[in-house]
Image 1: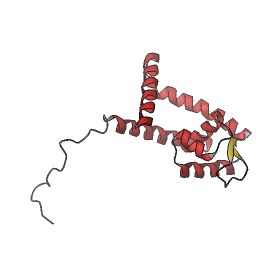
Image 2: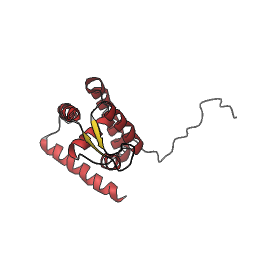
Image 3: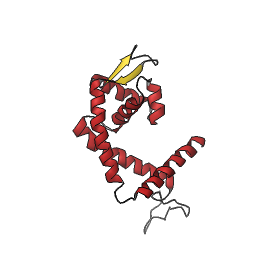
Image 4: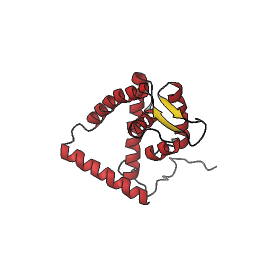
Length: 157
């Protein structure tokens, strides 16, 4: 191994990206920060993290669906969905038709799960409002339009 008498050579690329302004990276960073802070806010207050919340939200919109559909609709990893569903069933928030160990089982929120969902919606809407503070209604609409267009485009990639 060579010794450096001064500082080691600069190994940065002249083509290095600024990840804070490279759109895919910036969106990923934003999404991770939103998810992390959501879990930190929801877990102590409601006993669920953001993965659980996304599953609860999907089941409130589309009850009696299979775990694979939850994964598709939420973009969550199948293993994460499976782990979360085990916890949600154990907590009495989700119920299953058929054999819970089979792929064809269908899931829905229990009455307790629906009640938790409705309380979480209030907290989620408050977080969204705080996140979008300083945006005009037109900017909010434009942002939603941009996100929708990018979601369509990413499906084609």
